[in-house]
Image 1 (cartoon, rainbow, N blue to C red):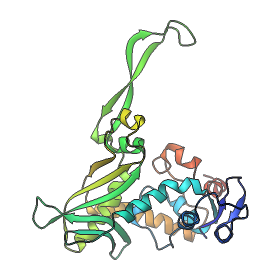
Image 2: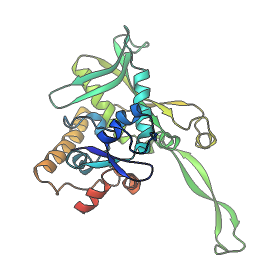
Image 3: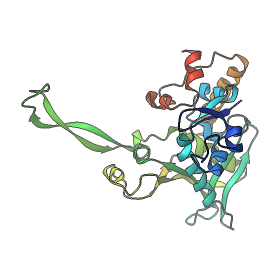
Image 4: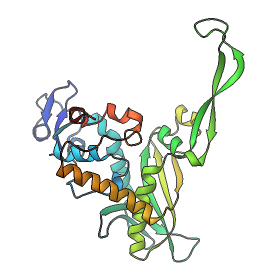
Length: 285
C-alpha cells in the first residue's frame, strides 16, 4: 500500500496509474518516463542498509498507508538514480551495483575497486548526490557566532554586541551517522565473501557545486571525497537489529511505533515535506 496518488501542479490529486495512462489536463507537467520512475516504491523486502537514518514509523507507514507523491519533490532522488546508472559498469578491477546478502538482510553496494596501493585489498565507495549544506556538515564544517568588539548604536538591539559568522572544522562533528552504518554494512557483506576492505569512502556529487553558496561553504569541487570510519561489526549489527525489531513490532502492533527521533527527522525539518506526515500526525506521539 505505498505511493498511490500524484499531486498535480494545480494541487489536484490523481491516481498514479491514471496519470501515467493519460494526463487529464492535456500537456503533461513532467515527462512520462520521469513520472513512471519516481511514482512507485520498491517492493518491501525488509530492512536494507540504505534505510539507516529512517525512523521506524516512517518505514512502517510507507508500507501500510497509501500516500500522495509530489513529483517535484522527488527530483533529487531521481538525479541520484541517474548518477548510479551512469557509473554502473564492470571490468577486471571493479564491481558496481553489486547485489549482496547474508542471513540477516540484502543490499546493493555502489562500487568496489582494487586498492592500487595494497595488494589483495579493496576500496568500498558509495555515491551520493547531495546539496552543499549536507556535504559541508558531512565534512565536519560548521559556523559559530563570534563577537566583533563593536556594539549596536541604535534600534531594538542598541547596546548589544555585534557578531559575525566564523567557520570551524571539527571532524568529530561530521554528520555521517547514517552513511557510516550503511557503508559498514556493505563492508560486512563483502568481508563475508572474503574481500578485504582497506578503506570506505563517499563520493558526493554536489548538486549546487560551482555556485557562490557552495564556495562560501568552503566547497570548491563538484565531487567531494569523504572517508568513512570502519566501526565494529557488533555495533553495526546492534543498530540494524534494533531498527528491524522496531519495524517488525510495528507490523504486529499497529499504532504503537515511535515517532522519528531528533536525528531521524533532522530536528523537525524533515517532517515539513514528509510524504506520510498526515497519517503520522493522526497516530500522535
